[in-house]
Image 1 (cartoon, rainbow, N blue to C red):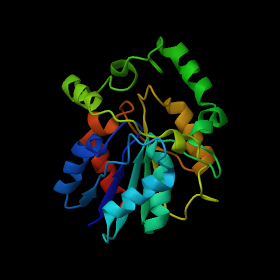
Image 2 (spheres, one colour):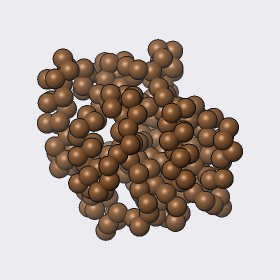
Image 3 (cartoon, rainbow, N blue to C red):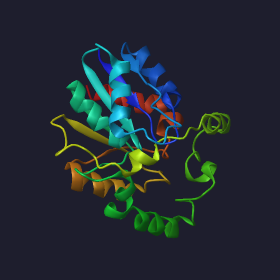
Image 4 (cartoon, rainbow, N blue to C red):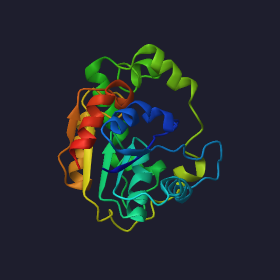
Length: 225
């Protein structure tokens, strides 16, 4: 069985994976879902990577999974650990030398959000998190997620150039939430094709698929092995 290393997105904590982690453990896998450093304006992408690698320890047969902003950290972890598989879930896909702060402008993310919002009546990019992020998450679970929000990523990490010269030599899969109101699905499909050369798998879910469709996501992750 594998060790799934689950890396959370911006503002989140390892808790955001708890339902997926339970599903994976029920299938016999080991799971590591650490809290990345928060409330530290000087924390770096390297620091995030160090925190994950330390949490993994000497575990082997590693599958690294990154959600949302975790797309900047997950490839660094996968390379460091020599992972057998890297999976990005509704995630940012960095280019060499690109900072998270420049990613939106470089990829046309803002234009994609505006175009999708024009089609769906403003739900995409909506400021209300229950509309823009948690629209398909049970309300009590969404409220708990918001109560756990943390100051991550840091200002330093947002300005730090992504340090790899190329995408790591690790088999990579991508998962799109076809009802995502944060990263429009068409935008992510195009980005995955352009930057990774892959056709994503899709789940009928919003951005926080680990909370809204945990069993389905865990099944997909398990199938990739």
